[in-house]
Image 1: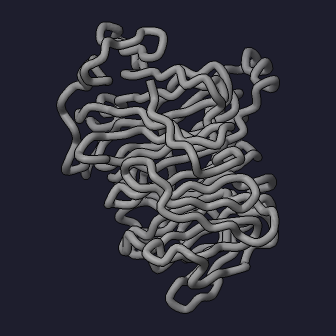
Image 2: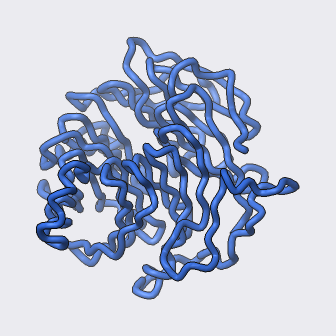
Length: 356
């Protein structure tokens, strides 16, 4: 079973992130932000003024001691070595921020909010360089593409997925997942209106050309970027309710997904995308996951499901977490991979994974 990190938050945890050293930050309802050690011990706590939720936390890609956190309409920058308050803050969004993303060189920060607007902040000059306004509803997630510092992706509750270049104010490419599904399925797609493809989360693989989206219709879609447009490669059907979180593991085509059905799944999409990848990831994990995910314990088949025989693309690992997933993250603690799960409770669940 999962290891529980407790004794920190008193309200549901909404977001997680881990730095390269294995330290974990978590944000919760009511403005609560906590820093955790690799052993799950609280190292410090900040309570932002007001009652705004901490909706997203992101560690700097260039400085592991720097942390960005969104709470309400504000973005705060913190130094985790002196975890007492913000060292800087920005108020550039007009409505509550849902997601933050930093490009690899950390000169741009993107913040997506409830109005559907994405603000692009130049961190060196501390000014807004772009306001991207194309989503007609809440923009739920935004992510810069690795190796392409001026290219980013966004998705929202308008069922739209968009590809942007910071030099342009309009998207290079966009697709409505509901309309795309209807075109493919014809009249049979009318039933999908009861489960609209509101897009909750996206994640980009380390190669920068492959990304995934999790939607309310229970599907996880995998896309490939081809120049200034994108094409859908496949759709993963494992969750029975909306997919709230997707997360590519570093330097691989292994994908974590979490849903409102209380399940966490691990997928290997390398067989579907690697054969078309012109610039493959250098450090693809090639070993199979051992079926003994929990060392020195017998596997509980009610908790984990691993399929090794089916020719269909099924999850390599299924965790019956039991609670609606708010956020997923991944880190290595003492050399061992760990899945971090935030749900409607006030604790973090940690599931160990053997190395691939």
